Image 1 (tube, helix red, strand yellow):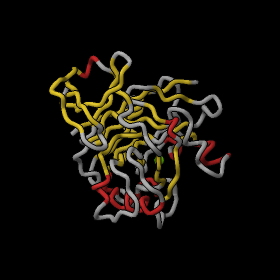
Image 2 (tube, rainbow, N blue to C red):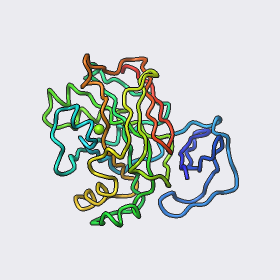
Image 3 (cartoon, helix red, strand yellow):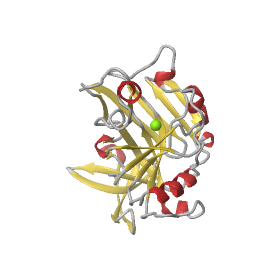
Image 4 (spheres, rainbow, N blue to C red):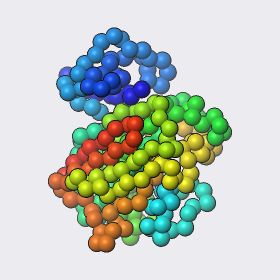
Amino acid sequence: MKIVRYSKNGASSYGILKEEKIMTVSGNIYSDFRETGESILLKYVKLQPPVDPANIVAIGLNYKSHAIETKMDFPHAPVIFIKTTNTVTGPDDEIILPKMAPDEVDYEAELAIVIGKMAKNVTEEEAFEYVLGYTCAQDVSARDCQIRTDVQWARGKSFDTFCPIGPCIETEMDPDNARISLKLNGEVMQNSSTSDLIFSCRGLVSYLSRCMTLLPGTLILTGTPSGVGFTRKPPVFLRSGDRTEVEIENIGMLKNRVVSE
Ligand code: MG
């Protein structure tokens, strides 16, 4: 099932995407909801970020290929950092190069886990009972702040619009074996599979639930595969006018364009 959130005439609603149609629903996507029997064509609405996250927890260096390209050792435990919730932006929305740090903004395709039920101290075996589904995300990163000027990553990862998500929450996929790719202006820059993850989705939910209570709507960004811009020779950074497309098997494609603040 593909859960979407959309706006029409100023109102925001959830629905179930079925090809070119959105079936409208009543109820709460985190507890009980049902289709109303009515539908609306996708082309008549604007899709919104499919979740207003309670928190955004992100994992660094979680693909073997990305750890290798950054010349870092494989981590012994998940590398956890936080993106603030002002970063969230939706399908077809803009990624804004911030005035404060416009020069080294990088793309990162990521599979994001959407927590469905409050999770505290859950085992790996139980973990998927607490997951609502999965969506495409980008962990947009200002590399100059992240790598050179700041010790912590919070600022470089948390400028407005630095977390595009969407287009839907897919509730029925296998998150451990999905193709993930990113195109920049139509050219493939990242092309991998979640089977290359060092810490699996099941393991991350369990581990994080032992660190912090995971509230419904928490987003967990699971890391990015190889091919990011700053490791290329010469480096590639986002410029005004660029178009990014993150595609994850079974979920769909998240498209955004880049503008200057
Ligand atoms: Mg990342």
